[in-house]
Image 1 (cartoon, protein in one colour):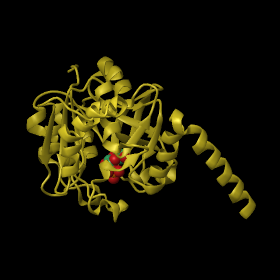
Image 2 (cartoon, protein in one colour):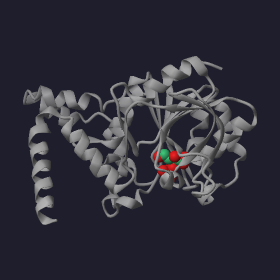
Image 3 (tube, protein in one colour):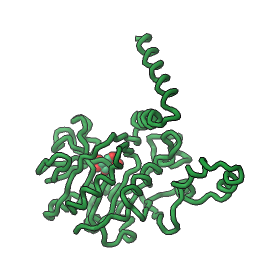
Image 4 (cartoon, helix red, strand yellow):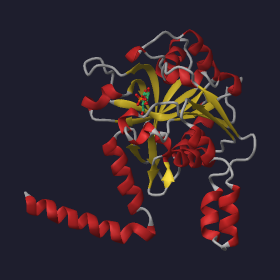
Length: 297
Ligand code: G1P
């Protein structure tokens, strides 16, 4: 089945414990890279790929996400009165058309597969995308757009993939490659968080997926997998067992793991350096830091 992908699921129910205490009162998806929250990067990428309906799977304490994508009449009026057109323009991408965004609660933290399954009624019988906002990808052509273009040729299920150092593979879903076609691989199997010995390769799944509605049906029966959680990887792997195609897509771009502190800081520096108004000041500070470190050694 090859069809246009117009719906995307954003699993944002996680507690974000790695960023406590900050995430005690703000959702981790609201944490900012320069001046845009992580979730904004995910939404912008989805829009660029042609997504029209945005489905958030949330949990308690995520109200700030709903406010973020709502209109802010007082703020907007005040900016308009002061003639602050630039600032008004920055708010434009945070607004959603009425009905374009939906929020569903995942009542229990049972895993990524379960979170996606919570959106099944809104997705219905069409292919859909999943974006994990922790994985921020800087790319000339946004990653999901690259995938949607590739998917229009292949159909099936597709996951973003990237080579990681072999000792890191056990932090990911890992692909067992059937045929390597360069930017695309066809997949023979997928394992969630394998031990180093069991990892079939070092080609890891990164948080972008295009999935068939059959994956949601598979999730109806999936048992707890790695970490005692309902794993999306296992539901996709079932497609392979049923002889349906699953592809890994080696995207062009730089991925930052913003679920980790080091990755988040790296992303902050990279996106800071990408901004014209910050570049010079930040770059000369980084040079200074290098010199200080050298001197201290
Ligand atoms: C999730 C997926 C995993 C994937 C990873 C990418 O894991 O379960 O297959 O490789 O995202 O970031 P998590 O990082 O939520 O443990």
